[in-house]
Image: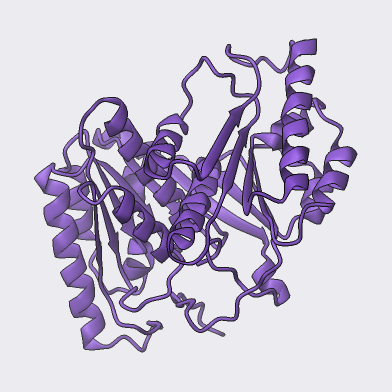
Amino acid sequence: MAVRQIGIMTAQMRAERSVGQIHVYDGLGKGKSQAALGVVLRSLGLGMVERETRILLLRFLKGPDREYAEDAAIAALQEGFPHLIDHVRTGRSEYFDSSAIIPFDRAEAERGWDIARGAMASGLYSVIVLDELNPVLDLGLLDTDRVVKDLKRKPEFMEVIVTGRGAPQQLIDIANLHSEMRPHDHPTAKEYGVTGIEIYTGDGKGKSTSALGRSLKAIGTGISRDKSHRVLIMQWLKGGTGYTEDAAIRALQQAYPHVVDHQRCGRDAIVWRGQQQEIDFIEAQRGWEIAQTAILSGIYKTIILDELNPTVDLELLPVEPICDTLLRKPKDTEIIITGRCFKQPAYFDLADVHSEMVCHKHYANEGVDLKRGVDF
């Protein structure tokens, strides 16, 4: 029987595509809009060093007079990268009740789609995020066939990211990437009395990008409260260069140099089960000592433990010290853990948010090259 493997591959040796793709993030789990914002951050990071990038964030079903989960993250993007991001909301300000659709809802959906069509026709944007378009289509507020037809006519280079629950099959059929965020419940988390631990795992795209979107939220929250919400991004199994998050982290550090700290550990090589080297254990432990100190210090409001899951799955770190540290973390410190794994470590029982990214479709599996600023 073949052994299922986990490996983290650099992107530096990969060919680069020039054709934009249509990404669809749906499902009941958390992380859809965060993943889209992570891709935006990555694109901005690339634009700072290679070519200018312009982004449109178009949010459906999110009226202008209410606060939403992504507001702080978007505020951080606009503060850090002025003149590069256009942000438009459509919809009611009150909570949307799908059982009581009114003409205003359809009018706002049409207004939003007119903006989207104009943006695609203009060719000004390299990335367009259509946040919560899926439920708009699912509710019949827009004609799905018309939307699909318009998306097919987008400029060749443009990336389009569609989020929200209930993506219709017609949209999935034309999508080049489809990642479903599937929620998992851990009732034991309440028994332990721990909150503020989020885990993103699975084979689909969106794990590390969701974590990066989460870091934006922490920074934006600090800006709104006139406080410094420091963020630590700790990465395992990534000792080289050319990883998918590099441009995004670079963008964060340049925009917020005194807020974001970044540490990585590991070899510039893929670590396979059964082929671990002594340096892999040393590097993993070095990374954990940094992370443990940061968690218990209370200095950071958000700590991303990127690729901790496969590190534990490869038995490079014992799980008991991780559980013990998470149980002792300050209440106001949020921990975001990412990475695929085949056997869930015990600390999953402490998570109050656990989203599995299920890969239904990925253009890389069809032989399509990855693209700088979007995939790496």
